[in-house]
Length: 434
Image 1 (cartoon, rainbow, N blue to C red):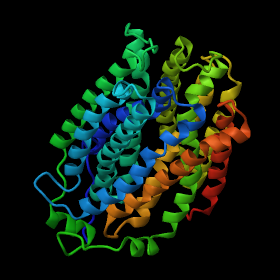
Image 2 (cartoon, rainbow, N blue to C red):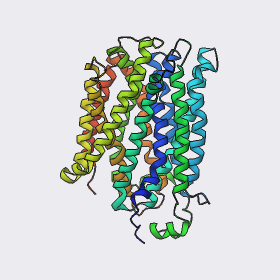
Image 3 (cartoon, one colour):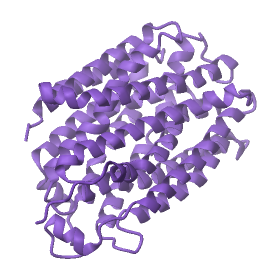
Image 4 (cartoon, one colour):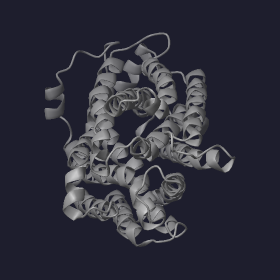
């Protein structure tokens, strides 16, 4: 089996540049779903149910994309066709989601339509996101894989900074934030701008990336066929590396924590800083805009912390760097309810960004290294994304119940998220070094 050659930094950048646009769309979704449905009239205890659909569709779509792309060879490439299809659908749906409340005057119909549109948005974004991780696994050698995922993490966080900040920027330039008749114009325009950026970024990647043709791929991956054989997913999981499952355990606690953050941060900040729970009030919408800013701070901090991960890994080891990052993030979550000023919120969300950096880079580095030399890389990574989706589904199902147990105030869910990250840090100890 031939060794993959080193790639230039520009090539590594081009491989992941479209990820920047996809993450802008993801940031708009994760930062504003609760705000959109709360503005439409959803009860806080039911908000978590709207978060079930996105990871559920991810858990279904990502393995399918993995299996199909493993068996795809066409003029456009192996993974890129799925990137194009997903991106085009995402652009259309991004224009629809903030207008869901206008599609019907009947409350339950509008909510149902909104949930269906959200389902299509997350399905398409999952289809567009998955190829980027697979192309790194296909084309980058083990020595450069850490750098490739670091670049991907940087672009991911940069995209999130832009996506989270867009609603605030639209308000800042003077677009209306009046929510008395539904989702404000400023938030709608943020989604429209994000959709345009997404398609431009994807076009750039498609024009500047050449995937390996079948013969070349076979030489570098030790296979003798142009298309990988049909595979039994149960057998594939049964023979997966030990670290595949151990990293999944860490993922369980981490992604449940972050779903609670995305779901309850708007209500938390509106309550603790603006002292309101009325979703149609000007103060609640101002809190919603500020959520984008603190999430952007989280993303900037994540970019900076990502630069520290390699030195930390060299000094203390990968597992220690992973666990330290999660503990710092857990402290950040625990601090959120005790920050009564909007500016002091920058501190806890910067700490949360440290955990986010580790979650984006280290799990896929560990798993793809464990899978090196095995066929069906795309299928494995698609299945591994279930470790991201399943905890979010369970958190969505139980979020309202947990909120009722810990109290009516949404800021209590930030403390729950902090506890989950501490548990995730403890779980890192089970990961094998090799």
